Length: 406
Image 1 (cartoon, rainbow, N blue to C red):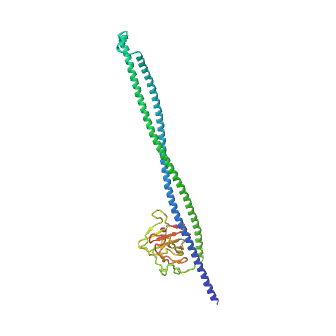
Image 2: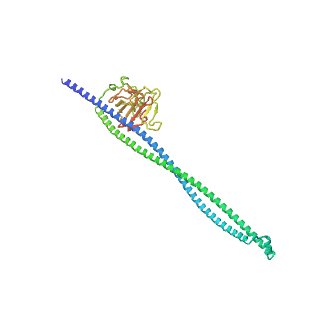
Image 3: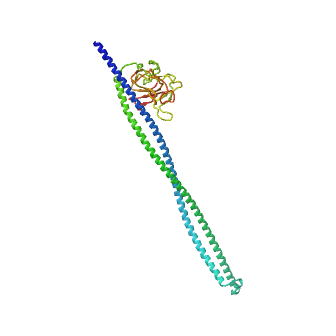
């Protein structure tokens, strides 16, 4: 009777441990789902932030170009102002010379007219008058020569003054025309400068908006990152609980694939100094994407994507305990996370639907097949997405898998 009771108690204990393990695995899976969803949101937000920053950088460059143009136009306007001031000075000087020439011309013309009037009032003067009124031949010649020279001098002086006046008037007119052209050029440049200032103000407003968008997106990223920290803490607590109450059970008891049968250990191959083997068979180990995408974005993993890799087995790279085995609609698709005995964690993603052969809580051995290569989740073609994470196994603990492979 006692033996029966002991057996019953033993079964009850085993059942309790199994139920706790299943509950813990489910909890870990749910937490990992939350974390992955948050990480997807963080990645999207970072992409949006990058786009906003790129737009902001472009707009800022436009503002810098506008500043350069405005400075150039303002410099040109300053030069035009200096030239206009010089022309105004020259115009004033030309006007002064013109006024002086006009005054001199008027005075000399008045004197000439007065002499003509005097001659008219004294009657007609002829060569005979000079001869008859002269006391001598010498006096005659002198009087005639004097009258001729005086008339000639008046004529030449008036002609010279008129020429000078015309030249000054023409110079003044040319200066006025030049000033008008400079005024027009200045007005045009001031108009363009005003337009550039308006555009610059619009661009500054756009930069301010983009800066505000940056703050909001960064706040979202910070909030999601903080949430992931809390989830990581919960995951580590679940891992510790799983280690404390972990039952020993064969991996095929938790088969969720339903299509590959029992577990096998056919990985084989060389073992690295870290104790890892390759997660895919020989002949399919070409890495098509490293830690960074061709765009420069961080990948955080390596992809094995050789031709014909679709449907090939995926192996556990070392002994360990499965902490996640599930299917996401996006992101990793079918993926598995293994906690290894050496303190490292590995993640295998994008497996074929129905190919996962292990469940959370299962114990796996090195080289054991855990699923098949596929293209589920966020994938553009068949490949194995493989990550290595250091303790405590969080998303932020991803390291280069090449450093741990043979």
